[in-house]
Length: 204
Image (cartoon, helix red, strand yellow):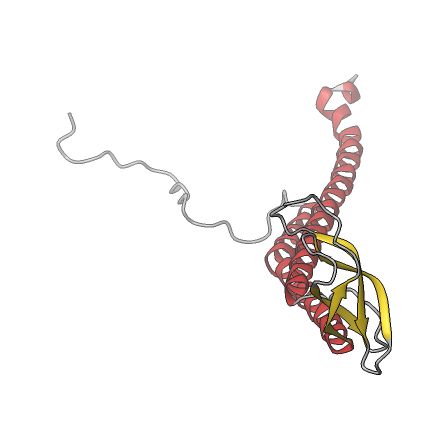
C-alpha cells in the first residue's frame, strides 16, 4: 500500500474530454457541410417560414372573403313575401328544414312577382316569409356570412402549412439522397486507390 499518495504517471497529459476540438475537422467533407446547412435551412423553414406563410395566406383569404361578404350584403336585402303554395315537407313535422317553395311578393315599383325561394318547411299558403332579393328585385341567395370568411381563412392557412411542410420534407429528402450518391461515388473512387495497397496486391 502506498502511503505517500497516488503514484505519479510520467508522459504527456491526456486530453480533457470536455475541451472542444479546435480547427476544421479533417473528416468533415464538403457534402457534410452542405447537409448541415440544408438542415439549418430546413429547421428555419419549419420554425419561421411555415407559420409566416400559413398566417399570411389565412389572413389574405379571410380578407378576400370578407370583401365578398361586404359586396353581397350591400347588393342584397330581405323583403317580406307570401307563400303561393304550402311549403313541401312531411306533415306535422317539427323540423324546420329549408325547402324550396313558390312565393309571391310586390316590388318597390308595385309590380307583382312570383318565384321559387328557400323557406322553412312548415309554412302554409299565404304565410309570410322573409326572402332575399338583389337590386333588380329578383330572388337571390342569402349573402355569405363572416363565419364563412373565418372558415375560409383557417382552411387556407392549414392547407398552406401542409404544403410548405410537404415541400420542405421532400426537398430535404432529395438533397440528402443526392449527397449520399455523391458520397458513395467518392468512397468508391477512393477505395479503388486504397484497396490495392491495403490488400497487398501491389507487393506481388
